[in-house]
Image 1 (tube, rainbow, N blue to C red):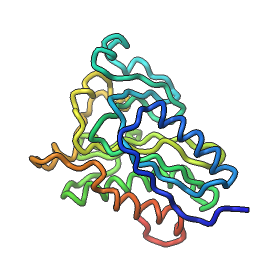
Image 2: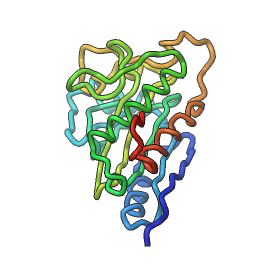
Image 3: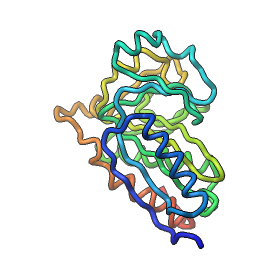
Image 4: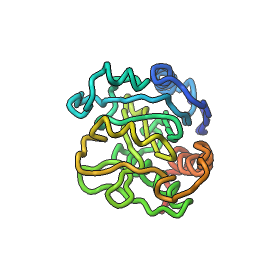
Length: 224
């Protein structure tokens, strides 16, 4: 018997990357057998670099020993995309959603993630847009503000997006972010010039609205 369509949102605070990965794997298995409904994890990580399944180690510009001195971890994953950084004051969303149940393809799903981040930026007067061909994520001019890396198993999504609210951007100097060497990385704080520290979970209502539309009402036209 299938679980009625709904979306559970878990606000988890700061979670170690390994623990978050194990949780996603468990939730994907549970979603596959309809033990749970679609679930959205909203969290942050301590300083962490992750590589996608293409294993582009050359885009890590320091040794693992130097990385450890920074207090950061390195993890190899099965998501798409290149190397990226996760850290405090970065909004991370990991949707565990059945795309088959809503008839949504992988490309359209990624576009929904992009739309979510564009809407978040617009709430603060920042005009963001998808990248050029071959450039995933969301950009403000030639500066990347949001990254996307997903995995889809059995039609169930995991991993997701990372939106830079006010992370320490110095960590990005030690990698070629997303494998794009000639572009910069930015944040909501840098773009707005705001003095206060943004609450990383503050824009969650925007995330929630978009993912409820993706999960429950995909048939509506004009869904952002």
